Image 1 (cartoon, each protein chain N blue to C red):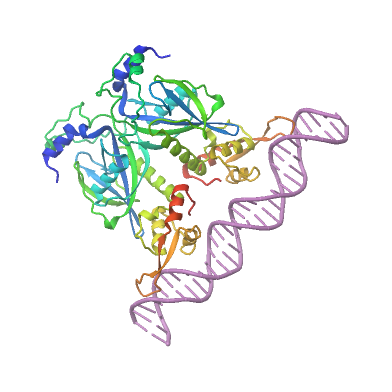
Image 2 (tube, helix red, strand yellow):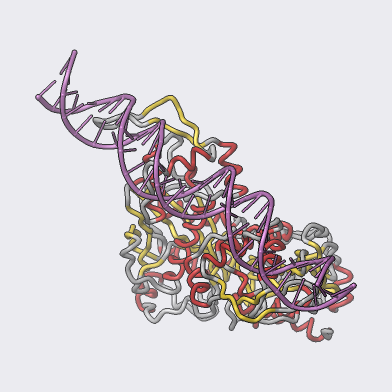
Length: 258
Length: 258
DNA sequence: AATTTATTTAGTAAATATTACAAAATAGAA
DNA sequence: TTCTATTTTGTAATATTTACTAAATAAATT
C-alpha cells in the first residue's frame, strides 16, 4: 500500500522528479496455453478500466521507464518491450467520470488547474508480452484493481485506451511477422510445440503444426539439442534453442515468417 | 524572415501556446527519378545539421503539428505522414557546440535554466515522402539553411538525429512492404514505370521491371485506364490508377508486396 | 514383454508463387 | 517504311507453400 503522504508528495511535487506532459502507457499482453490476455487496471477515481501507465523519471530512458512500469504491475523485470505509437490528441484524456469527491477523500488534496497532472499529456505506447501465469498483478498508486482480461472480452476502457489496445495488437502482430520475437518469451530450451503454440496464440490464428517449424529451421534460427523433454505417454519432443547469431541477424535485418 | 520580436516572444512565452517537453522531428524523404533524399536544416547556433522539427500547439493533434512543420519546410501540405518512433533519452539533446554568444547576438536574450526550451524534451518522430522537385525548402526560426541531401551522403547531424534517420528509413521500408503507400505519392493517373521507379528509389534496390507490376495487378490494386501517355519515340504506356476499394482494404489489413 | 496411446517428426505430392528471360507490341522519329 | 526505345505479354525453370500421410517413439496399459 501507498501512504497518503506518498500520494500527496507525488501529486504536489511529482514534476520535479518526472518529465511533465509526457506519460507512458503499456499494453501488456499475456499468453498461456491458447489464451491471449491483456493486463488492465481499475483507477479509483474513474469508471472504466485503463492500460497500466506512469510517468518518466528525469533520469530514465523511455524503455527503462516502461520496464519499471511493467515490473511494478506484473512483478516481472526485463520483459520484451516495444514502442508501438505515441498518442497526443489534445482531448485524449477527457473523461466525464472523474470522481472529484472520492479524489479529495483519498488524497486530501483539491486539485487545481495549475497542477502538473492536469495539463495536457502526450503518451508513448509500449507493448510487452509475457506468460501471464508467471505474473503477480498489482494495482498502482491510483488504482485498486489490476487483472488480466481475455483479448476478446476487454471491458469498457477510458480515454483513448481502446485505440491503444488495437494499435498495440496490430503492431505486435506485424513485428511477429518480421522478427523472431520468441527469444524473449520462451524458456531457453523449448519444444517445437511450445513455439508453435506461442505463435498461434499471439497471431490469433491456426498455423499448420507440421509446416510451421520448417520455416524457422530452414532460416537456421533454431538449434536442435540432443536433450528431450518427457511429458506424458507419448513420444518425447526434442528441445530446441535459438541460434544466437542467426537470431540476432534476423532481428536486425528482418525476416518473413508466416 | 522572422523578426527579433517574434523570436523573443517564442523563447519567452512559447510554453503558453505549445506543449512543453515534447517536440516533433520529421524525416522528410524526397525522391525524384532514381534518387532518394532527405531534407535537413542548419541551425544557427550549433554546428551540425538537424531534422526539421518543432513544437506541438496546445490545440493540435500530433499529425496536424507534423503536417504544419512539413508544410512550413517544404511548402507542401497534406503529405503522407507516419510516426516511426519516439525518442526520450535524458541526454538526447546534448551538444557541445551550442554557440551562446551568437544566440545572444541574434535573439537579445540570455537563456536561463528555467526557460521552457532548456528542459528535457521527448521527441516524436514522423516520416513523410514527397517528390523533392515539387518542394520549396525554407529554413525555420532558428536555422539559416534548409536543403536536400542524398540519403547516402548525409552530413554530420546533431543530437540523436542520425539514429532518427536510420529508424525512419527502416520503418518506411517495412511500411512500404506491407502497405500500398503509393497512393499518396503518385499523381492520380500514373504509368507502371512510374510506380516501379518509385518503389525502387524508396527501397533502394532493383525490382524486376516485368514482374513488379504483376503483383500489384494480381492483388487488384491497380485499375488500367484506356488513356495512354505519349512521351518520346516509343510505345506509349497505359495509365493506371489505384482501385480505391482494394487499396483501402490493403491499407487496413496489410498485404505483402515485394 | 507386447500392445496401445498420444504426439512428434519426417516425408512428399500437388498447388502456388517467384524469377529470369524472351518475344511481341507500338508510338514516334528518321 | 524502317528504326528505336520502351511497354507489355508470355513462359519455362525454379523455389516455396500447403495439405496431407506415414513413420517414430516415450510412457502407460495389458
